[in-house]
Length: 126
Image 1 (spheres, rainbow, N blue to C red):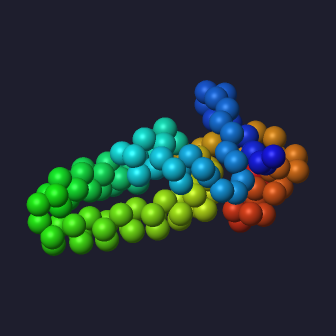
Image 2: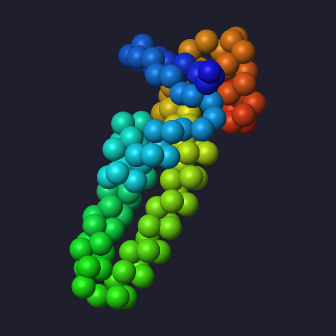
């Protein structure tokens, strides 16, 4: 079972859990218009994926009739795979760092999950 660490927004009391380790959600769906990234508050990266998805769709349509566009589409698909793997590996850490940068705190700092998160993600104790 995956280990999760809870983050709390001190201003609102809202809680969000972030898994430690691989993110299947980001691996499988982040290139789908950046929707999971928007949901995690990573709006800059999500916007980049939204633009990239539009460009990929355009290249896919143009590639039906022209050989150079097919090659570009293939390269973009490989890039898609590489970035998906990267986000699967580091997306949860990016999310946790985003929360901390925006004032969130580890909700239960004395738990083993919090200690593991601080160690895995090299977070300062709070």
